[in-house]
Amino acid sequence: MSKPLIEIKGLKKSFGSHTVLKDISLQVARGTVVALIGPSGSGKSTLLRCINLLTVPEGGEITVGEHTMAFSGKHTRLPGDRVLSGFRAKTGMVFQHFNLFPHMTALQNVMEGPVTVLRKSKAEAEATARALLTKVGLIERADMYPDKLSGGQKQRVAIARALAMQPSVMLFDEATSALDPELVAEVLGVIKSLAREGMTMILVTHEIAFAREVADQIIFMRDGVVAESGPPEEVIDNPRNDATRAFLGRFA
Ligand code: ADP
Ligand code: MG
Image (cartoon, rainbow, N blue to C red):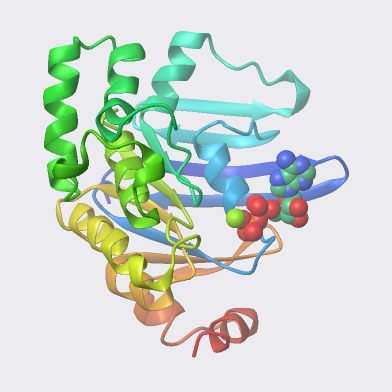
């Protein structure tokens, strides 16, 4: 296998005396999709937040592309702002609750990062933002504010906003969990088209059928460890681990 785009080795994270990630290791090849599944509280969000350094782990190593960061307890020193924001910009994050800027239109939301962080000209940022809003099917809503958009539309703007930073990987944390059921498909459709285009993605999701369809690799987390991982035909259709089987049984 060629060098993975993302490699995590021995990742550890505690909150106080509670160890939430215990020695997590995984690899994500470029152009592939990983679905992270597992019970609530198993550490899925914490793992995603560590990959984008919203949370700083206390042990292990994270590599994204050419950048590697090693963590060792309180001695971990984050790199300077420039390197840190470069590392963060490589990982586009989409949250359950959209987190759009409420005082900005859809278009302005998508332009904001490229203008302020990437220092693009307004004209260039606007052209890119319009292309991305077209891609997620929302160009006709470009001038609307978030409170005039449905949940599915807000989430599609959030995806366009993350893509505008030209990330090398997209991280989705339960991107459809807050949506009314009839709005889930439009967001999954956008994620599926990104997968088809070869975007590398890590999806935390409870949409097991979707995970089976779109993911190359399923990682089942439980109590802060990777309990089982492999292709969907193994982990979802023929789980080896009793805990995986019990978890999936809830969706059957
Ligand atoms: P999941 O996304 O799989 O539901 P999380 O990563 O959100 O799991 O949480 C894993 C555990 O870590 C939970 O027990 C949660 O309460 C705890 N946790 C998460 N974030 C924090 C935090 N900032 N401070 C303290 N505990 C936290
Ligand atoms: Mg979570």
